[in-house]
Length: 50
Image (cartoon, rainbow, N blue to C red; front, side, top):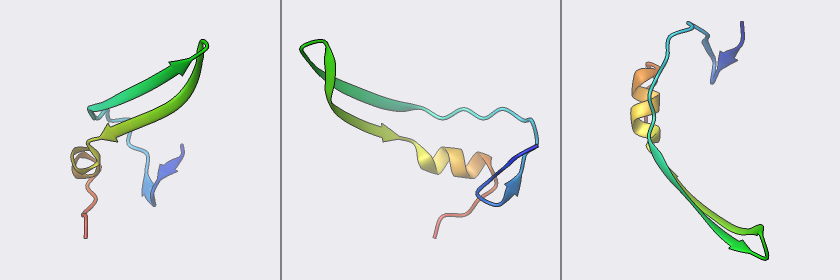
């Protein structure tokens, strides 16, 4: 198994929501903006934010 940020894998699922906005120009991605809920993800992983 692998680890993530120094924590060993547990096979437990987590839920993390976010928004990704793509700007398409000529059928190709020209810009990408995103905002993910890292606080919820880290909390579920048992990590503390400093």
